Length: 356
Ligand code: AMP
Ligand code: AMP
Image (cartoon, rainbow, N blue to C red):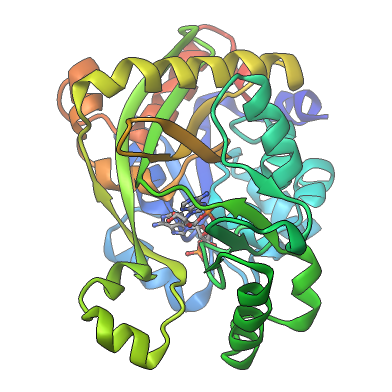
């Protein structure tokens, strides 16, 4: 299907498009620096962001991001010779099945892996198969016997997550969360229970290049989450008085550099994930991905999630990040790396290999 559509594309006049949110500025800036036009599918209130930075050549207004599936919008995107770059707002607001089956605009990346990413069970299967260390999971509420993080299904940016250490505390917390409007009763059955790893969060970003047959280590961030990152500012006695439930709503990201002796294992982990991705969904990961890890005081690296597309944490590297600098020198970042891969694929007549 995509090959058919590509046949009608003017390959010397491609545009790079994405939904106006998440990492769109990063993607558009990179596209422009590599000489592509850009198309931003966004909501009216947000259009000014892309206009302000002069990064969107075309703006397609929608009320809801899922309108990207509408025939009229898809036709417009195809007329503009658009290649879509998927990011977190695609997986958060559009049904994965519809992205895979109904979105006929060529996409940079492997769509099949978005489906693996969307399911916690599939993710676990992928990461375990790659031989990575994962936190324990609990099938039943009654089995909770250690500090556990309770996660809602889907990409919620940590919204509505909470910690618990026994079935009794679980039910108490659930009631509190419902009262605060952070959780619906119907969500209880869908909650995923995972061992809480006492360690610091580290999110390494990788780029799997089909053209160069290499897995590049691109940068690292940690997240700035509300309210968990605010709790330490309140003395413990007051925390107990007001009964705070730590939640993990993402607000931003902070760049980090790592102890150098950790790099070899992280790089190896990225390579193993790519190798396994080729077995579960050929041709495997195309382009950016990120492992969500927690590193303990014994320097054990646990992986609790994978994002098989650009993550917003790479925004900390817009311009340059230390690790991208080591390989590319100045001015290389994930948005630009994506555009560069598309450009190189075009030059080598391999564009079909990186689009799905
Ligand atoms: P948004 O369009 O901002 O609602 O983002 C879509 C999804 O991507 C959210 O539900 C979050 O899970 C995730 N996300 C957005 N921004 C960030 C960020 N800066 N860091 C990590 N995840 C993010
Ligand atoms: P997620 O939606 O899986 O990306 O998780 C959102 C946030 O919850 C992460 O950034 C972490 O701060 C935290 N988190 C998730 N899973 C774990 C875990 N197993 N152990 C410790 N913290 C976690």
